[in-house]
Image 1 (cartoon, one colour):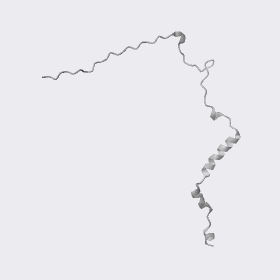
Image 2 (cartoon, rainbow, N blue to C red):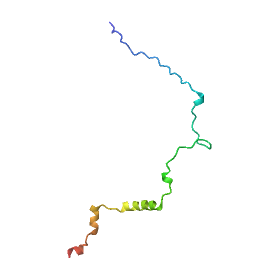
Image 3 (cartoon, one colour):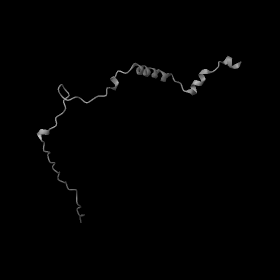
Image 4 (cartoon, one colour):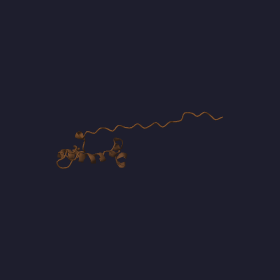
Length: 88
């Protein structure tokens, strides 16, 4: 006796996609940024702005100051007495 055959997977026929009707009056063309074409999208020009000198000086000062800063826990040992003065 053979076991009865079970229902296997049956290939489903692929659905045909309907082709969209293209109206040639309203066909979209790619943008052309050359002379006489559309304007290119706006860029971020923040970096190229001429900043006032005050801001430039402040920024240049801030970097060395950050390097020179010492935490207070270590800075307390910079103002200690010499060994000779401590014994007197």
